[in-house]
Image 1 (cartoon, rainbow, N blue to C red):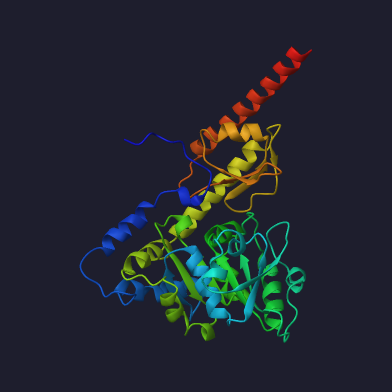
Image 2: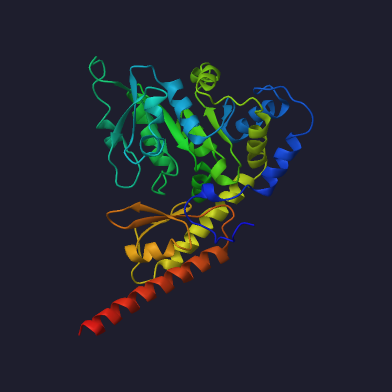
Length: 359
């Protein structure tokens, strides 16, 4: 028997699989299907992705988000070229060096306080074109929602796209939490990808109720031809692809992707509002999607982590990240907030007692 654990707020990857996705996997398990993406379910994904991203959108299912990013960037870059990214980007910080090690891609990083790039920030690395001594900037990757929980508006995305393309570069979007961004902005998936000029998208489903389902979505048809070969050599071609495709289909054929994202976002907002008046807790930035970043005393963090899983984002400042998932409930949030209040109070009591004893 496994010991009962309280819900964690470390990552939306910690959440289970949505029942509808599990049902889709079970349904896909009937009979035999052609392998390596020639199955009926994968073939049917084309229409589903076109409905969400526009006519001509091509989806290539892969195993994980790192694979989606690496395959996407390889399709956009030659061996001597580089990608510009935020210093906080997943590609730079959280992929174990995979873009460099697996794909041999040079990352030109740009510091940014809110996780977002702007044309002005991109310009800091968009130079040296034609200089044989410098890895040539050929693409820019942005994350929506960002690693810091912030969102790009449609206007911001258009400005970035126009600048990137004006410099002869291509635009990639890491959309591990694209559903959360669309839900928060109140727009469709196409409005913040295809319509603003994104060339290639890494679309995430695992964080939004899937078991393990990501996809490289090519929105610029000129970049599609190499993907099947890059995906194979990059060890991202699933033999029984129908089981990945079935998850994506379950999320996207109706509004499950949206409902799951809305729930996660709503719980993050509930958490932000509930801790906002607790003395000793400081919200670092507005919760725009499904994450809350806050600073609280390190000793309080340590005690809370005995019961609830969450990450310390910055060891120096004490900043922590609390993530909400598709299955986070109001009760989960309220229990966590109650624990925060209790631990903050316990800390105050200990400090008061120490002062009393010292006097």
